[in-house]
Length: 284
Image (cartoon, rainbow, N blue to C red; front, side, top):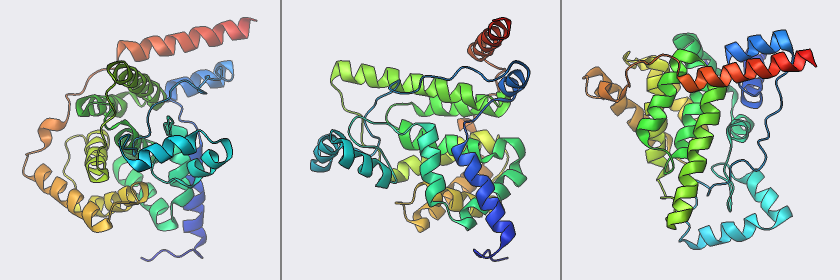
């Protein structure tokens, strides 16, 4: 069935997905606590993390130009708004900004694909989960190890604590950046096609577990990945998804899926601290 911009149902899906892109993810346990004790303290995200843009090659002429643009308040702001695939200068695209950019350019057909994928995969296929996987591959490639990404999304599949995983990955990227700065080692320039492959690996671990990738899944994955990685040709994304599905069917890629683990001690401690803070807030 074709989807047109005049369809009220499709427009509604598109609008609803925009809210997924723009809203801050909240874990179920923290959402429950907030309903009881009120709103959680606002996190001070400004200036917490400053890493090199993931698309920037520091040794290239364009890399130098990006540093210059980033230092100009007005022009730099325009560049950040217009750039679909990365920050400039010493900026990083955080998860909220990443979702905003994807949502801004997402078509009705692409929005529908995110919802259809969730219908097929349930909670583990939520748009926010898919976008987090893409964000980790797009922004974290070169700063995060592949196994770190896969272990994180495997935890997410079990815990549903997307807020904790986002904070954890930001801290890991910040630590990796600081180490590279001390060693004076630039962040490697990872090709976008490789980032698509990493995003697909993460989505598979998070949303499929060890299940096969069916033909309908392939079509939705191509649409979603094309929406996020717009600079990569759709035919190339189709090839990446098809080869992944074949490897899974042949049992060759199952080893990348980490064994399921219970909720980490760090996640439990983080939630306990939130509970303690909210309890103290209600007593004041």
